[in-house]
Image 1 (tube, rainbow, N blue to C red):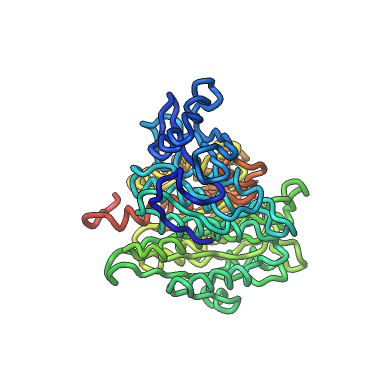
Image 2: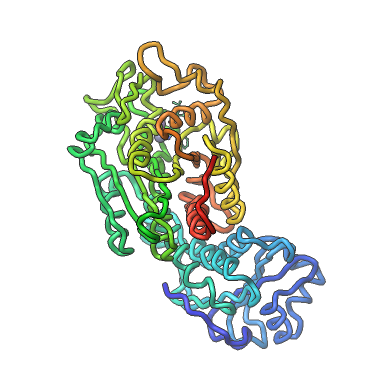
Length: 493
Ligand code: BES
Ligand code: MN
Ligand code: ZN
C-alpha cells in the first residue's frame, strides 16, 4: 500500500471514501467543516438530531452526499478537542480504517485535521495502517484488507514515519499471528534476519552449537524437549556515535508454549503461538527505529525456543546452570519464559549496554492483576522506569507499575540451588517472576514489561482486529526517540 499526501480541498478529492473527524460539543475539524459546508450542512444536521455526537471512535457513514466528489464520507468521532493526544488519534484513525477494511476499496483519503502536530499525524497514520490489517493470515478471502491507494490530507510531517511505524507494528503482529507450524525458532530468526538486511542493521543468529559454547544452559534446557533447535538473535542498530551509550531491548520468544511436562490444559494452550510476542515486539521496534534513522544505538536480543514435552524434555527437579552461572532448580517447566530471558538478559548485560528493557508474555498472574488491556512494568531503577512510563503515556498505551519489595524475593529461594524457577505459593506471581529476572541484570538500570494481557486479544477492538495487537512497539520506539533527544548523558541512580 502506498500513502500519498494531498492538499486538495476535501470535498474535491476524487476517491471512493473520505474520512473526516468531528469533536464532541459540535466541534468540527477543519476538513469536516469544509465537507459540511459543501453538503449544505449534512453533518451539522445529524449533530443537531444527536445522530452524530463526536464521541471517541463513533463512526457514521454518509452515502453519496451531494456536494462532494467521494462516493462515501465516513465521519469519525475524536472526543473532546482539548484532549486529543496520540492515543486518541491512533485509535480514531484505526477505527475508521477497520470499518473500511471489511471489503476491498480503490482509494481512501483521511482528512482528520490539517492542524495536528507531526506526532499526532504520525500516530494517526500508524493507527490507520494497523486498522487495515487483520489476523486472517490464512483465510482464502480476507476479512480485513487495505485499500489500493491511501491518501492523507494536510500536514505532511509525520505521514512517512507514521507509515513506517504502522508497518513495523504489523510486522510484529504478523509474526505473532503466524501458526507454530511455520513459525519456530529457526524461521523466526530468518524473518528477523531479512528485515535487518532490509533496514541495514547487523544481525547475528546463534545456532545450537553457539548457544552451547556461550553456556546458555537455561535457554538450552527449555528447548530440549522440542524437535526445533533454539536460536538466539542479536540485532544491532548503530544510529549514534560509537561511544554513545547503547539501549538494550530483550524479548521472550517462545514460539509455542505447551507448558512442557507441567503441561497446560488444551484451553490454556490455544493462544500459546503468541508466546513469542515479546521477541516480535523487539523486532518490530528495531525495524521502526532503524527505518526512522533515530540517532541512538540499540541492541536487540531475542531468545527463541519451543517449550515441548519430547523424550529429552527438561524435568521437574532438574538443576540447570544459566549463562551467568546461577544454578536454578526447575519446579515447573511452564515457568520457561524467565529461564530463556535469564540467558538473554545476561547476554545484554555483558555486551556493555547502558540500560535494559525486556518484553515478555510472562505470567497469567499479571493478567489477573491488571486485566487484559494493561501492560505490567517492574524495575530495579525508578528513574529508568519513569522514562518508560512517560513514553507509554505519550503513546497512549496503558501501563501500570507493580512493586518489587525485597520480601517478594523470598519466594524464589531454593533448598538445593541458588534459586528456583517458581515461587513457593501462587500469589504475586507477576512480581516473583520479575524478582527472578532481576538476578540476571547486575547493576544496570532495567525495566521488565509483562505483556501477557494485551499482546494477544480474544476479541477485536474497534481500532484493531482480534489476535496480535502489536502493543508496546510504539512505546519502545518512543523510548528510543526520547533517548536520542537527551541533552546530555543521563545517569539513572
Ligand atoms: N506464557 C505463559 C504466560 C501467559 C499466560 C501468557 C496466559 C499469556 C497468557 C508463561 O510461560 C506461563 O506459563 N506462566 C505460568 C507461570 C507459573 C507456572 C509460575 C503462569 O502464568 O501460569
Ligand atoms: Mn509457560
Ligand atoms: Zn510462556
